[in-house]
Image (cartoon, rainbow, N blue to C red; front, side, top):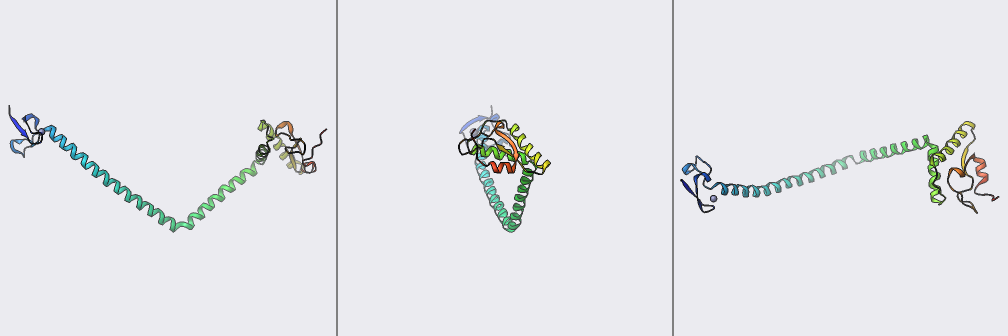
Length: 188
Ligand SMILES: [Zn+2]
């Protein structure tokens, strides 16, 4: 059996352990296959670290470059950007205002609920039934031309009693009736 010495692992091995290499003496690679693959792997790992470090360097440089580009473009377009943001804000505000105007009864119901929660006169009520009162007030206001409002029969924050915000404590009356009633509630 033909054998060849591998200087890496210090072993004499049969030819079949060596890769064919026409340029070499005996037409075989200088190191055995296991040694060769080990060497290649070590080289690969060593290069991998270098490759990764290089790639990271490129990425960092890019980041710095990207940052400086965005900084410069911001400086250049500062006024344009702030104008655009202002317009955007105004647009959002206008849309909100239009929505509130379109849904005035809904907003009134919502505000009344918020007030009642703040004043701790909140009652777990059916909000759709309460909304009906606000719709009715809006309808009557438009139909008669006299402003109508939703009133708490027993005021939420009366002088002696505290009513609740729920459909059983609501009525639709005119604004002037509501103003003259104020928060006075006569206990019968
Ligand atoms: Zn070897």
